[in-house]
Length: 318
Image 1: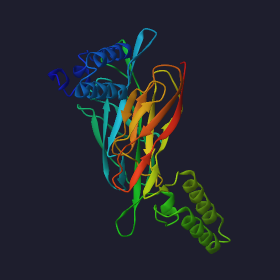
Image 2 (image 1 turned 135 degrees about the vertical axis):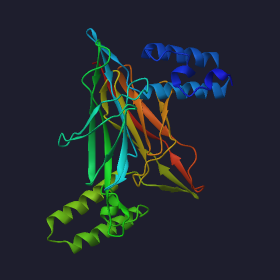
Image 3 (image 1 turned 90 degrees about the vertical axis):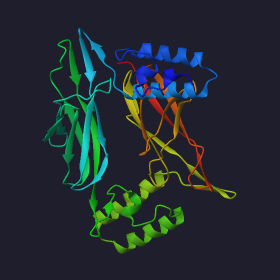
């Protein structure tokens, strides 16, 4: 493969300025894909660079002002009570943005401010799902301003043994294995409801957990192979042109599936690949209703295989 594609920066891979517009990026990608139609490694590098740029928020012209969205990430995004996360705030060029104020959406409490590299370390002492908002009033360029960014952090409780507990897992709520069959779950639920005939809160929690498990696709035995359906969701499922959705791909136990290929059904364009937590961020630049298909060829268990999943996204005019 040509050395042109060995750079780590996606804009350099495509031979573009970091100030390139979305249209310029797309035009360049199509041109390069045509040029290297028979070079698999080159096309892979081009597609990966394009996907990386798509993940980054793009500036938008509003009147005479350029609005620069702040992109917020946390590592890790799931922790236990008392642990810390590193929050990083960047602009569309992936440069860290300093002096960004970080607050909790739930109570407006200020929890920190980014340093010169655009990062801040934050500790969480309560369990729950927290949303952080990043904001900065003044941009160094007077013709530009920042748009707030948000990110979520999941904080788990610890059991008396010191092990992590996922408060949102429906199988844990029923104290049932995530590999339990439908019949086993139903029998277990009936037993629990018999144990709590007069406790409204307990019965409500049991029923809600059972309903959540029923919504999830179950593995199917086909000969000697267990076929595991991929469950795909998008948040939000309706957006405006130029905005992003978060795609999440899970199995029947609600575990995120990594390295799942995402494609637009309409044109077969590869639009991303899920990371370790089973998520990917995708931007849509044209109006319409798009179908995203999620596929993964190989299951870690040789006796299992995945079945493709689909989801729709509606993209409207601004």
